[in-house]
Image (cartoon, rainbow, N blue to C red; front, side, top):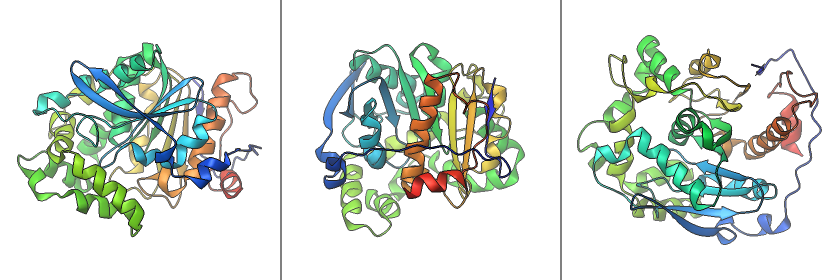
Length: 331
């Protein structure tokens, strides 16, 4: 296994130019994508599609919907067929009742259904937050459909269990998740409150999130936590039963994330059989693809190029996110 990681004392210059079409700049991505549905055992799963080439599946987290990838879809679609899901319970996807309908194996099968709906047998799997948890699980449980794996701000699920059990700060910071597991807690949460937190004062963005969350089912959102999130004493559960990941992994982690602390990335290699590249980003919180969109997009494309060219001189080196990629992101 090759491990690549952020090291402030090792530098490598990466010359990388990202060409964006003028139409992506001029129009909102919502006007450019095609809306489609996949069926998984009677549950309709909405997703958007753009581009051509190898299939890439983007999976959002909580609370979010496909539009979380608005800054990535256009540039990625110049090289890939990009599909961004609304996971079950969210926005235009179906919202089945019952905690059992949000079990991890079912969430994994939703991603497989999208891959199949696109007429493909495998894809690059990308996930953030809960989407990251699903993506880790897809790679572990369905290696046959996973070409490469890209994770944003979600430690390997088994590492999250470890941190909850052994790291008091992570346990304290996860009180929100334990609240979400309580019956009827969804009645205390409004879609507009969630939209306000994500929009950060942007009226247009608030309108999009408010509309999407108005169509969503907040109880369904809570069911992800009720069905899967680790529970005290943290000795059992689906996250501890995942097989080894056999795909190459690129993992981002914003170092200011207080919901999922960076200590959770330690020893990730224990769960992997293939190469692992870790990119920690100073000054960034839980949403690196929002806070540093150009950096995230360009790193994704650079890394995927490396994976396609195993003899590339980049392999086996370390990247210093605070230095080298600042140059890329500012271009």
